[in-house]
Image (tube, rainbow, N blue to C red; front, side, top):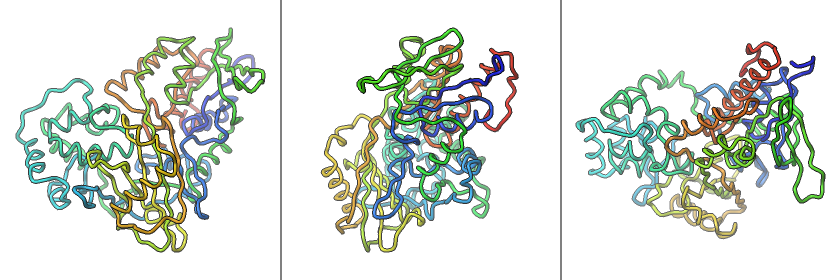
Length: 477
């Protein structure tokens, strides 16, 4: 507190990280959230198609970490949480759909019998994977790529046919480019403690996996009405003033804190300044870098090492067809298709469905292969529909379709990412904090944690500077 007034915090970005930060600050600060978009939620966006509420962005969140479920309950959506009817996905391998082997850890096998039965690996691939049990300990840099580590231990087939498709579905990235420590932290203890990746993965899974199927927490969750509703409710309940359609042009220091300059460059309006004791930047790394460069170049520079990949989502609605069993499929990059993954949304999420209608959502776009997304919407949808027909046998003509594009939508965690972000935060001037998927993890729970950590950091700094208590007083703070 200063002079009896509340700590003032401006949050730039009304995605889930920024809104979670605002929610964590409720009752502890006077908060304003700004976003250049016309709506809140960022990549949480649900819109109707053929009378069904269907996601245009993120489809679900991890339920086996508590943050998403906890926040859903706190904002009054606990009774609307839903779980998938099935999460049994397949891989498009050698011209047919094959089940993803059971009990893998981000594609790393831990169940030899299940791997054999799946038919994903060739006989040579199976032999090469088994060689991990006899190979001497490998030498790696401190933060190898996922592909380098897994490939050295169990061979390229495991990387190309199992690990790469799974990472491509989550990050739109390639295993040979992504940081092991930032992307698959589950494997880090194995890297340090075990000679064999297979034995280490089996040990870690046995230690961390659910004890019994009867008590296991479902892997994923969503909410009725869609994740766009989750974001809207969070904005309503966070206690902040939330303003959309307000781009932030600059940050400036003041004698007592910060000034956020917002307003449009070419709309003829006068820039609007907002003074604050602290600012949380909950926007992608490129936008954060632009805002930081004039006033904290040493903090801004490392953010150039956080590139982003673009993704296209094609939603197809069919009438009176039945997709293959399971929740969908993944496609290895070496298969040469444009579609990298597809979800049978109405089979996976029965609450979405309408009688006689089937919704399939295809994902296109990989890091380093953005040419796929230069096609127009009609052509992109046609390619997706043709490849889905080839893979699934759904030969019917879609009765409706929608193309959603996320330009620069998914950050790529290159080797050294964790150290890179730590160096950015060390160089930040007092009163500034970062939050979001570009820094601390992809996915709704990770973004919630990132936003709450940023809220805690700025509140501690502000209270310390103003002589107030620095003790947390609410969940997330």
